[in-house]
Image 1 (spheres, one colour):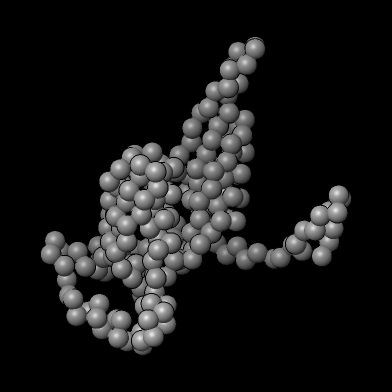
Image 2: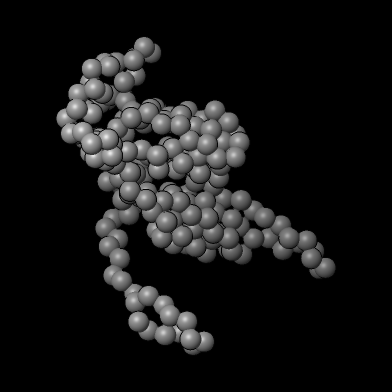
Length: 190
């Protein structure tokens, strides 16, 4: 381990695999700080980054210039990426709900051909993550920060049938068979 000045240890730099990460700018906000000589403007950016195969992350950045704020947000999003298990590489395994502050979202798995039915910030998350079929609804605030955090809260509670089966001491086939027994739900999705 290399040492920083001041005696603190830091981890050795590991080569990170950045294979074709997609990033989307979700929101940019101009912030004014009132000082003696007038106002100082800076910009806050919210960015979502994903690899298109189930890994996704979001980050915020603030700077005096827009490109610098976007770069900081993108770097933060790359560090905070999480992996979400996908069914057939196109949709979620089950329906989930997420909540953060006043933001509440409902995310439902959808049959092939449905597409991404989601608005604004949630759409950016699903497109960068690589989900092709999903239905999502925001039931609370329209604040993009809270919507993104609520969406991530929902996605982080997703579990693959293999993980659920291991936790319950069953085989993945039993879990999947139960899902297919319930059949399509009323309302046409599922």
